[in-house]
Image 1: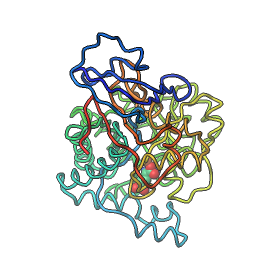
Image 2 (image 1 turned 90 degrees about the vertical axis):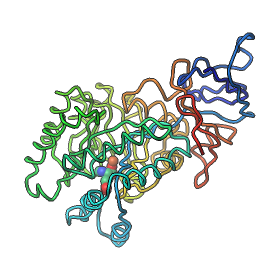
Image 3 (image 1 turned 45 degrees about the vertical axis):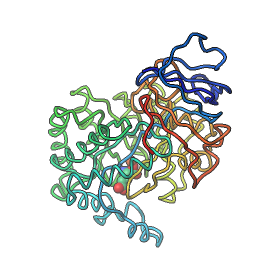
Image 4 (image 1 turned 135 degrees about the vertical axis):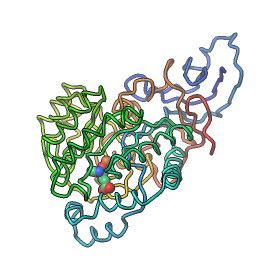
Length: 400
Ligand code: NIG
Ligand code: FE
């Protein structure tokens, strides 16, 4: 089916800058964009099946939220209270709270309920223009429960009008059954990966490289197992300390390194040389009241693509708004509004290894959002209200 979306103000991002086309039109053919440009340049004899008048509204590529932990049960508001009283995220994790508290709640929750809770979260993101989302496991931490969480993520992709990319993050924390045996646990994770992959549950493999999680040597074992299966890797790196995780991940040509507040110059250089994207997570920085900023200027200077994402999770980033992430990427990390939008679209796609989305151009997936705004710089400007009027994913309007 050919659909013409006309009378739009397009921010295509298909070239440096916003790629603004004032009186623009998009022609979609099925799930893809067939043509984008100024309305005046449309072929006069164009035959379409359906036509939509967007009344001059702003249209941007759909958001790619390239780092989320969407599938889990429970919440950790009491932990937030403890942190406000002075307890650190690390101290709470070492005392058995943190990720492990969410693992207990998730294991105790059935598949359908996990799906229903996660679907509600996904719909909240989608209402603000998200058309592609990455979902990590990491709150199951056993073969059975990691598989369950990844199946829920796959089901979200089947049942909602959005693309879901799954990432196995079994190396997220040490589960109680492996207390004091981290190397044995890593061995188990390496055994699970081929089985999870054989079931079609894994698009990429991630790990948490940190003092409270896994060492570079342990991460290397997980990455070797992923690489043997032909799976791309990414890494929670340099969030709370510099472990040299980014350099390690770059050696495996990681799709992305994420967080990066403690990233040093050698890590920046290694990422640039490997084509690894930097995923900045302003929600986690904000919610953990961090003060050390990721080295944004060094990443820019080295030409590392900078993505931003929600990092939605119950411990360090319980928000569900990509618009707020755009705003905070600018206020906290000093990205420009254009860099923030590119980070939530083109570079978010890049951080997932996807090249068929993130901009408005012929051949790309027909994933876009329609906004009651005049200029794309307003996306990073407002917060706490939702100017998104319509979302099209794979050429089809999302139900609202
Ligand atoms: O990305 N850093 C590790 N993982 C999550 C937090 C998970 C949790 O606290 O539940 C993150 O911030
Ligand atoms: Fe995360």
